Image 1 (cartoon, rainbow, N blue to C red):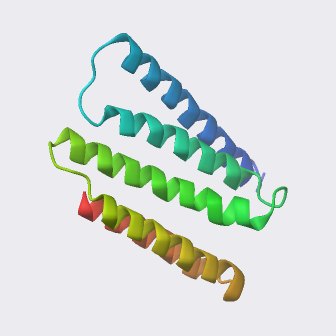
Image 2: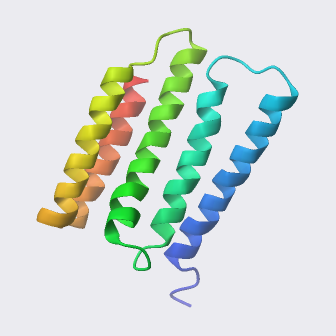
Length: 137
């Protein structure tokens, strides 16, 4: 009973949930008028589901796709949510800041995956970037 649910299964189901959210939000966007920034949130759900699907395929696909690309997609979905919130508030998104942040994330995450592979450091980078994006928003 220790391994009741495999972590890959949970991540895969989370990806399906994000994909369903994407489909529902896209349907709402087509059927009724939405507000500024909603399209960013729609694509955030799609990008998040892509990242989660890649994470769930760890040890099946190459590490670059499952570790680097998967987590980058998830961080990028947070960027899209932040940009959507900025648009909703009537403020221009910090595009240059987001681009720099994404490049820095990929560089640090790649470093702690290939050159100094320590999971705790990768986790710290991932959660620090998520926290920074939430603070900036």
